[in-house]
Image 1 (cartoon, helix red, strand yellow):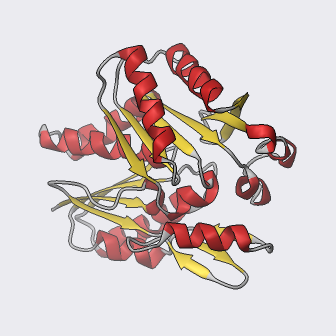
Image 2 (cartoon, one colour):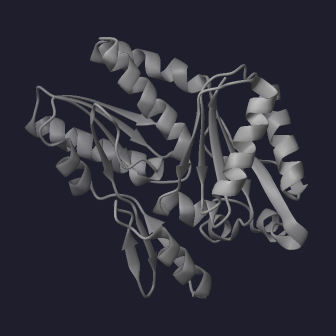
Length: 275
């Protein structure tokens, strides 16, 4: 059996016509912990975090949770959140080595997405597409790196608080966001970290700058996947703007699960595209 396994930052809950499973990360404060499972109430978590004034943090999946997800498959593709922001890739590799020692005939490919959310979705979709075409494990393993180079990830965020307090971005950069309707537009670096691109005042300027950046990166009409944190209206506006600029493109919108909601925060948008 072929199986794709991803951590919960991919935002997907299921995948049609393929064995697919997500392994949850955990969101915590000193008072509570939330497992980013399929039934997590994201609104409830965000409400609690906004009212909580102590520290909050995230934890990568346990080795055992990966091992449980691998069970029963003989060809496994694992897609993780960027190693530049999380230890999840490392934990998946630890599980891979342990599983292979106990199941020597199994093939496991662990992919560091250098991304999150919609960037991971594009990788998962491509692996599924390759399997449907009949490609072998070895062919997919060798082609995935080149495909990753064609992907680009963007962020349009109203707050960088959680990213800053967890050391993912500079507190100096974070302090200027959210004041007077200022959003930050950022992108994923080649190392999978967050690079600020521009500070934009108002949604209209974010839309203009986002289209400008996507055009400049060499986008010519490939797939687009948009993740939003309780902001479907702005996600729809982005979709409309992209279709105006590039015509009828393969685009879908996905609500964020817990991990992406924690870091992108309420109102945040993450966009992945094929160049």
